[in-house]
Each structure stands twice: as C-alpha cells, then as structure tokens.
Amino acid sequence: MTGTLWVRNRQRVRRVNTVLLRRIIRSLLAETFKIASCELCFHLVASREISRVNETFLGHEGSTDVITFDHGDVASEPSSLRGEIFICLDDAVEQAQVFRTTWMEELVRYAIHGLLHLRGYDDLHPASRRAMKRVEGRLLRELKKRFPIAQLGRSR
Image (tube, rainbow, N blue to C red):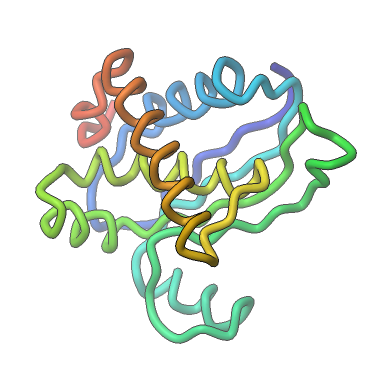
C-alpha cells in the first residue's frame, strides 16, 4: 500500500499507543479493504474539539463518537481512500462503560466505522445501520485475534 496515514493524538483523555493503532489501521486498509493507495488522517480528540467540528461542519450540537470526511471518490477510485476521521476518546471511554468493553476496543471500532464510511457504508437508516454494525463487529473480532488491542492504552 502506498500513500500517507497519519494518526494525530490531540487529546489528553487517555494515553494512546499510536504506533500500534497505525499498524491496526494499515492492516485493515491493506488486507481487509485491499486499498492500494491512501491519504488518511485519524484525529484522536476530546469531546470539546469533536463538538466544535460537529457543529461547524455538520450543524449538529454536542459530542459524537466518530466524524468522517471523505475527500475521495470510491466510485472512480475503488482501491484508493482519501479522508479524515475524527475519533472522540471521551465517547470511547463512556461507551466502553455502557457496553462493558474497553475504551481501546471502542477506539478500534470507531476507526473501523470511519473506514467503512469511506468505503461507502452509511448508518442513516436502521437496516443499513444494522448491516454496518455487523461488519464492524466481525472486523473487530478478527483484529482482536491478531493484535494486542489492550496495549493501545500504553504509550510506546
């Protein structure tokens, strides 16, 4: 796979092993999605920043878990991705408690979710949301077998 993948940690909610997160994302891109080329930036942010992005660009109030901006064209470039994915660590911590999982697993789930949006999935309607959640769950289970996701909570 060629191109650029940035993981920018702009939050202080939790320490994140960005090197491991980048490895996980690269694996998804190359092996799962068969992406040949990418220009992606994952922004790890706190609720204040994602709320600002949410209101400024989407016209929605408040925090959310993931916001994806697609800067490419899946139809004309199916093996290429270009975009930005904002992931809120505050939401990952909160949702992990609700769903009795870890914030590290939620972080990976959010990365998967953003990439699925870039691949053309949407979650606007109940049926498409259920389909997207099934794919998220399957991919997360596969990644948990291959990567030490719990170590995302440790700095390098």
